[in-house]
Length: 378
Image 1 (tube, helix red, strand yellow):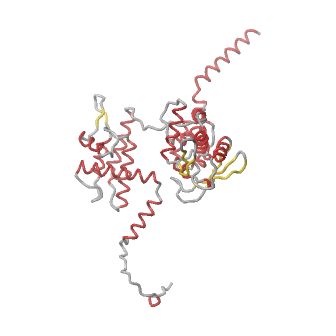
Image 2 (cartoon, helix red, strand yellow):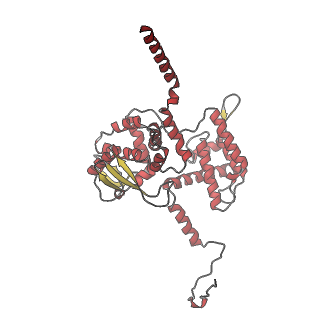
Image 3 (cartoon, one colour):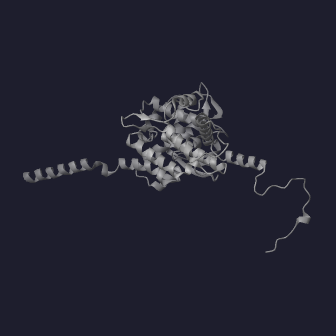
């Protein structure tokens, strides 16, 4: 194919030609804006928090500013050893972060409290550091085999000593019913009941998905069925709108909320003023978590409750009731089977006959004895 030369047809422009190998400054800014706009707000906040911590730790530990140059794997390894506790022979746990630096990090308000960090926190901050290096087009220190081996062995060591990864308590059917029973406090109760049931019955929605729902995203099919629309989510960022059903009590609760707080547009779940007056402002993700925790406290439930408890509880309860995994994932939109299987299997095993072998054996033995006794009476 011949290339057509149209140079003579182009008008002259007063612009300096770009370097083929370097993005223009405004293009770099535009690319950064696209990345920021395409990243969930919670993720952006967690990245900023992690980078602030890295910056403070590096300055205190090494006298170096984050971003001047790529970091070697030894720094990432030192970060792990500074923040993950390890057991000694006498049964005590230690980590290498000097107490003065630990106190300085807390004083700078980049660290909540003195002491080691949780394994998941360390892993997240290493992940953010790796992404930072990739954005800078540097080799990531987090890909070093020595670091990966250290993390794997550290997790095993903590697990053997009883320091397992903490998970939020799952809201299965019985705790959910207890939460709903507290929703009798007027307008707030109507809203919270609709919110809890949509988040749980609607597929275990994330709190960011709940606060992102708009009034125009829901439509009623009949008295017992509503549909709500999901757009971009944590795992589906394509922007394709997908409809999910709400049926039974969840549909009825949503009808009740929209009846007392009608609106043509705006957030589906809004803040309330004193006296039950409905605001035009939507709830924040933190407020979703506080609603769950407040209702659990009112219900007198023991556990570590959070907004994620609704999502894990939906999957666990689906396992308890024998719902096929494919149908569950179609509602939750989990991409990874391994992620959802932990909750699903925990629920399904609760109703498994394999958990009642002793009771089954004793019942069978009792039946045999009863039959033998009956035979002797004939």
